[in-house]
Length: 360
Ligand SMILES: *Cc1c(COP(=O)(O)O)cnc(C)c1O
Image (cartoon, rainbow, N blue to C red; front, top):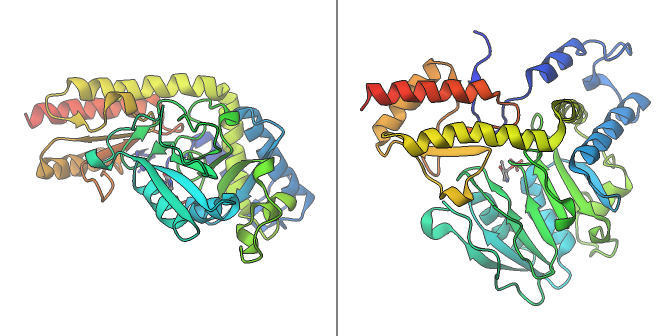
């Protein structure tokens, strides 16, 4: 079997060029006689890999000098705890709850202080992003928290919420590097890399320097203090070296593709093919309010559970994999991250057209 079209939400499709390059370097990385998996994280060779990865990410996202870039472990879930532990001075965080991940972050923050739910879209199964132009931001909030792209529901913030001057923290796991963002609008951006960047094992945190505190309570675990890893160049302990290496290759691939302006154009074109089809289909329909649609995750249904199951089965047989929706919502979901080629979406739409005819 050759390569399939992989619509997985994460871990997800990676660029073939990157995988090929990693394969070529597997046994002997650039003449050093060993694989990147086998080398010391304290070697000059690896230092060069992590430095280049950081420099390329800074270049791609135009990250200002007063932001640190940390390569951490524990996934996005660990940042659900790290955010309140590092940012709560007054003990207050305001949360915009737009899906499962935002809700989990909000719940986790309740362990450490007062976590206010200041907006939610749960009333309509998280199928839209609430109006965030004039929210009841708490006077004493240490930060406002959002999940920028809701992987499970397929929604994305159409614009940066108005936090009335409070620090904005964003989980961008599933939309990072899909289009440009103005980093300065955020105090903290973090993303698990396994959606749109690399293999699982790294969460990258981009943190404004003044938010990296050295006056945290003693009780905050060493590994959860951002300062620990900021001071140690992400190498307080052994980092996930191989994942960082692959992420670095993806950053270079994105630069070669033309950077984030180009990726935005490609991603808009790709998503439009699918959304246009869904808007005109007599069988399938998208589940998200058009103004809140994600460019990366596209959920859809037929309205008939058995037909959904049949579709997923036949799609799998035809080489379109991982189209089953998240267990919490059902239906289907096509994740069309950066590495999904445009013909993957074109072919999927052809297949859906045929399925529609056969099952009308
Ligand atoms: C997948 C995902 C998570 C969970 O990531 P882990 O790395 O498994 O902790 C959190 N937030 C978003 C937006 C996600 O897509």
